[in-house]
Length: 170
Image (cartoon, rainbow, N blue to C red; front, side, top):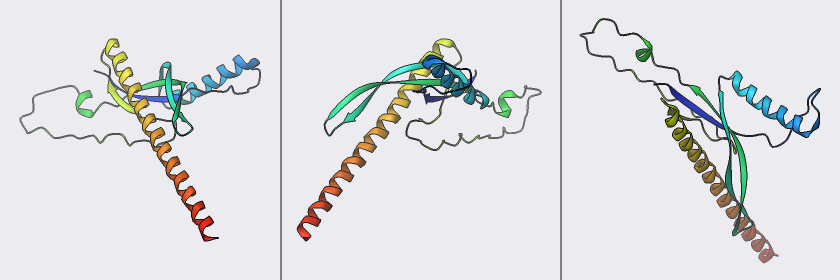
């Protein structure tokens, strides 16, 4: 069974100029191409792109739904030595416990969800795993937006309190 790790990145929203590329369509295609090639160098295989709804806060009480385009990449995980080594003669000694630590989590950035690992032995299961990966990415982003909203509300409340204190002090 092949195990994959997935990476979800935002699709470019603007085109990128390059020599010989003309028009907005060409510039946009160039920006997508450069993003895909940059990840391919790191070993990531392009899987698909999706457009997903993203609920954003506007003002204090209202929300607006916008749609975000994302690019989904995957790459096979390195197999452990015990899985890749062929089985030779049976060993009568106690089996060694092997433990491979999980990959280090990448530093969090505002729009880059963490890399999520999963297995995909068949194409049908791969689609189900991708749905799980996208759901996790959306949940992570929703948590980030909620935390940012709480921070913004707290900052606004603190600045309002400070202004009242300054007025009272005068």
